[in-house]
Amino acid sequence: MAGERLAKYISDQKEPEGEKTDIVFGEVTSTRPLRVRVENRFTIEENFLILSQMVRDLTLPYYDTVTSSQSGVVAEGNVVLSTSNSERMRHIQIFRDLRIGDHVRMIKGQKSQLFYILERSDSS
Image (tube, rainbow, N blue to C red; front, side, top):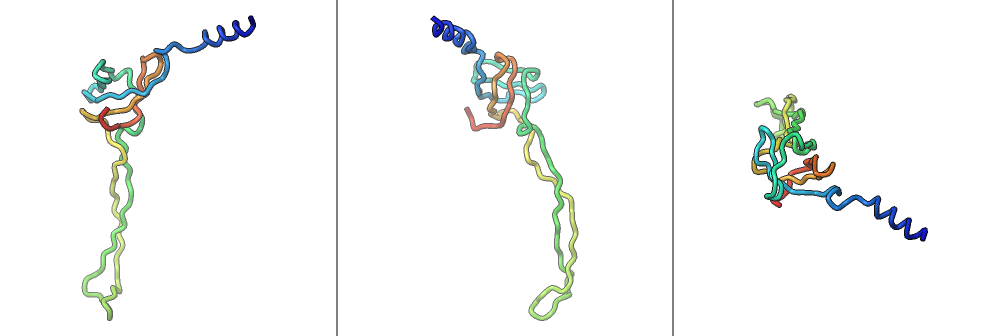
């Protein structure tokens, strides 16, 4: 009897199938406003999407040291006697914004009311 009550309590506490978190795949169909088509079944609007940093623009600055030799200043054996170092700031793009046609991998949550875009993926 006590075992049956415990089993019933545990089964009552389980989430229904539709409320579990799943990974779903989609394709970006619009960027302004952002829209993602999920598995050719439905479209998710921007206010139901959360973007990870991996699908937003991230560009970082870095310094590139350029070494140049002064022409005409050489010693025996073609060894450069005088060099000049200069630094120039450059930028490298780590991640880019989503574009139309990008395939994305998402986590479905809050009873399918919120989708967290994790990353770009190969076509689904």
